[in-house]
Image 1 (cartoon, rainbow, N blue to C red):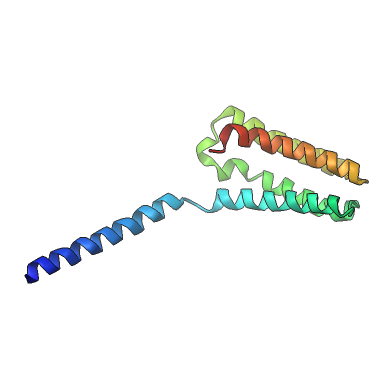
Image 2: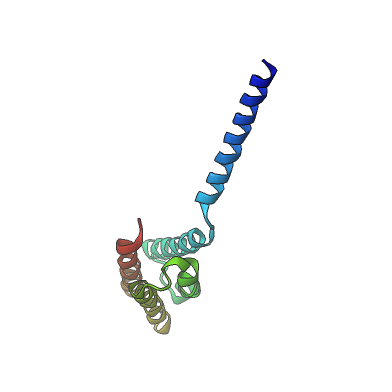
Length: 132
């Protein structure tokens, strides 16, 4: 009887340890999630500013700069896709759209909306092909 109880406890502990290990392996790294979350929040903040008619370059430039800086981390965050040429093009397109928005900071809500639209297009292209 005692051996049976020990066997059941051993199986239970083994199953729990296996569950913990599989869960930890499935999580992967938080880096790609953080890059996408940060970019998403900056895009939402720009959209909110446009909707509130707060479209001065002083309102939008810090958000656009953050988007541009984080765009540099796309390929390192998704290391398993770094060798894919199309993925690199999409990342470059996002950086180009960010650069264009920063080179001539939006002076009106219409210009800000156009810049945001260009940024969203570059994001949507990649998400269409790679987001699973």
